[in-house]
Amino acid sequence: MADFIAILDFGSQYTQLIARRVRECHVYCEILAHDTPAAELKRRSAKGIILSGGPAGVYEHEAPRCDPAIFHSGIPVLGICYGMQLACEHLGGRVQPSSSREYGPAVIEVLADDPLFEGLDQRVSVWMSHGDRVGETAAGMETIARTESCPHAAVFHEATGLRGVQFHPEVTHTPHGRRILRNFLFAICDSSGDWSLSRFTEEKIEETRRLVGKSHVVCALSGGVDSSVVALLLHRALGDQLHCIFVDNGLLRTGEREQVVATFEETFHMDLHLVDAADEFLADLDGVFEPEEKRKRIGHTFIEVFKREARSLSEVKYLAQGTLYPDIIESRSAFGGPSATIKSHHNVGGLPQELGFELLEPLRFLFKDEVRQIGRELGLPDRIVDRQPFPGPGLAIRIIGAVTRERIDMLREADRIVQEEMRRYESYRDIWQSFAILLPVQTVGVMGDKRTYEHVVALRVVESVDGMTADWVYLPQELLSGISRRICNEVSGVNRVVLDISSKPPSTIEWE
Ligand code: XMP
Image: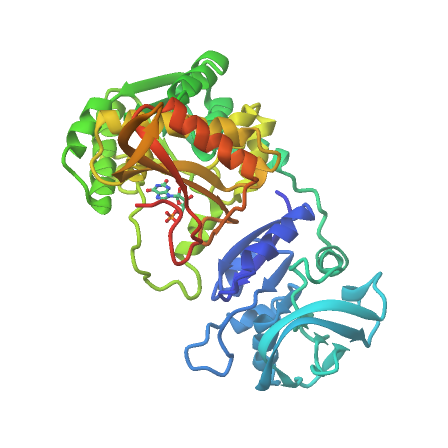
């Protein structure tokens, strides 16, 4: 087993970033609930514990806390921002609200010869983002760095092995932040740094073989990156014991079905069950205008079709899903109370129980770019590895109003042109999503001296890190005019193209 670092999550927007940085140092880590018992961390032989930042004040009644026993567990602890304040408070120091929030660049002066700052100058640029600060350190605690406005910018408590930093070493605005984290991982926690994605994949393959034995596994393949990587990884582990079901709901993009068949059946020789259920999905969408109703019906039909097909397979004991780490972290964040449903995402959550299957989620501890890298290593074509996200309900939620065959065909054609043109764009890889939407209005146009009265297509191109927020992209004019010209010329029934210049929030990425 590779060395393991535990990151306790107090709700900071940077918690995932800490995990990314640690893994970049080839040390395996997991983000755990803030109150994970010290005994659990010892049982898992954690080499080190990082306490994340967080939005609360430690003196607040409801503030999230950690098990105080972690400070006496013999495992080195690094508290970042709120994590440092919490540790200081637990050990007898005092935290106070600052009169003003300190947000932005600062320079710390290193006061002690501590391994945390090994290899750094005496003055180090850092990024601060805090309201509270440590006013008085605990007995036996040494201040190892300060700034002009923050007298205890970093501390060390010899008796417990705790170190705390008020600044954020995990953000790129702290130029030597990686070095500071490396120092914690290697000089202080003595990690070996021998974790890698290839090693993770090999271990996962072995573990899956042992777990599944001679049973069979079914996997819902959507053609997206996550389910494709799950399928490939399980195929490596299990060969013919893996069965993939790909449902053509009639709402896919041009060439998508053919690409899935070519990749998984022809190249990788997997047992692929292609279910053409377009008629069923479209019949169920007949006369439906309301976005949530569309999503519900598509989700429901998907489950029915999938169940039918899965039941036809014998000896299946497991259902594999491409759940990723951010899905899990977000569903149990320190402050993750119930949030309003803006759009109900289509998933197969209830399926395993209904079908009596056990769940396999081999990617549940990985981030998206790690999954992409594994995909590449397993030989998945770039077209799939670099694919933009495509929603489960497919083109239906990009057709505003009634979903008919004629309107699907119109949008699919426009979408094909957008994809073709966008792939030629030099910064295509920086784009989160680029797609067309069909609007429920007709406008007047003129073509070859004749009046036309036809449909409008909108173009949506956004940048985003995780889909939670997004900005519209300022594309070069030639690219925009090429897309517009081709859509009006090649898609019969469309005579106008408009550009969506809204960000999220207040808009969303998809129109429905
Ligand atoms: P919104 O429209 O909520 O989209 O800003 C955020 C991201 O989620 C994708 N999306 C979906 N993905 N099933 C999915 O698998 C869905 O029902 C769904 N709705 C939106 C959307 O494409 C964007 O990347």
